[in-house]
Length: 227
Image 1 (spheres, rainbow, N blue to C red):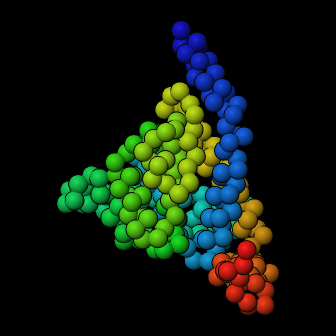
Image 2 (cartoon, rainbow, N blue to C red):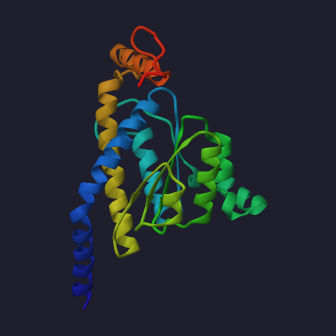
Image 3 (cartoon, rainbow, N blue to C red):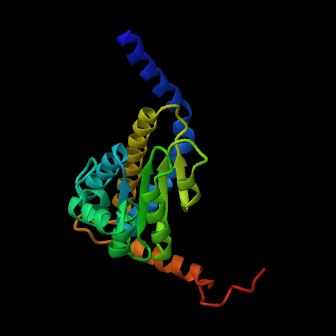
């Protein structure tokens, strides 16, 4: 009976993995690249989750502050649930729903990223944190279980894992975290020198992107009214 149950778990994981790569790869590749761009110019990643998702979130920050595979500069990433004194004090004084939102208000800045992990996609403290992040001008990404769910609807971008059990969702979240780290490191290798400085070429690319964002062409002429 035990062997059959173990096999069933593996079968569930293999079934969920079949389509995961196809729909997850473009999302986590984009997230990893964008995160490398932001963090290498001084932005910060804030991450949060509850229970097993908290462990997954903290795993991600460890890979960014430390390293994933090859040595590279450290980057700013904070797992909000890891500060037990703050989370318990906030829960005691303001209620459990505020434990992440108040830390987002303290640490978050415009241009930062808040990444939230939830197998249910319905955790009230994560929903409140997402709302606070948007108030500050942050970008919100979420990893959840099957869609639709409330957290998906509160995010700028979401990756919703289609799996039958919480355990399988968590296992695929870890796969997504590692895929994101691979994309992050590839982008960092292109953008950042070993001592942590951005390359001159990338600085020029960023300036060009800023001009485009302001609605101007290469000669500085206004293009907003062009058809």
